[in-house]
Length: 397
Image (tube, rainbow, N blue to C red; front, side, top):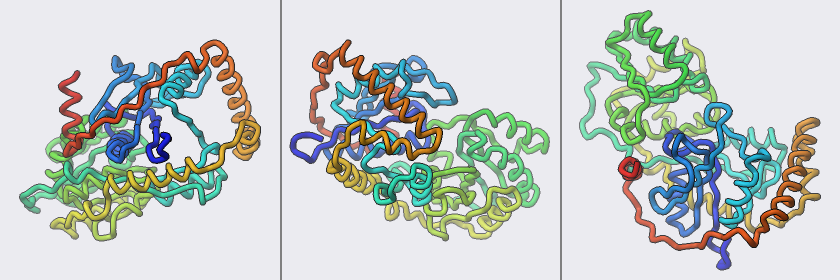
């Protein structure tokens, strides 16, 4: 926090960020943009994507460190391992940022009440330290089609990473049965992943080439054009903290059918979503109910979710965190021990080694010798939507 006590320096650390687009990526991007508008300094740290490494700037002066970490599983990395710790330390010192990890933080934010309950149960922290602040949607980008679609043919849209966690295997069983029961239903499937081959095989096996369109990966700037071509959005996730994709679909005027998992039941009112258990027969039942509920729903997203509101609520949590009392290493170690019989001891060991490594690095390269980044207040030029960011980034590459 700056000397005026109002402006925070915020570091967003994530394995998922631009050029990829998904729920986590959208959350970090939109929240960062709104926090910048509120006058805070925001920096993102993620791993390199191919040749995209080093420091980049995106819309609104958002600074991104693409650190040369190698993902070990999908896009996941281990930024606190000892070989990468010197890079992390340098960034923290340059940006004048303090970092807190799970079981060693002042306040935490979850995107749903279900996610909050899981965090409290798994970490053993006080519920009073955990706040629920939902995701939101860019209603300037995701708008309904000006012309209402005919219901002579029902189009069901799926846009998702085709992986196990997103329920791709469930789609393999649901799509053929829906096509059998409803001859006028057609599917559009956008997304890519290791499970795409199973969907391709399903399409061949049941001769559904004319009724199941496979788009592959869909750039985020083109998601709306795919959504507005459909009547129903189908989400088959097996786990989900919130699911921004549901908000985007509802904002475009689609009725949603989704598995009843995680925080999904909290996202939309009952007249905008049909929930089902993550089982093929129940998903088919939910699709049938959704077809009966057509034609269409009234988009209400501008009233329900706003990124500006999310940023202001997040700012309040940051303010509370900065008012918390500081603790030294010896006071924090007992909190790590509460994480489990074996995990607690392991966390303490890692913490001690990291602390000793920090001391060694401080001896080899003192903090005073690392140049701090000057705080420059940028004039924030608000863009209408993420479309502008995608266009600017494409022109810059």
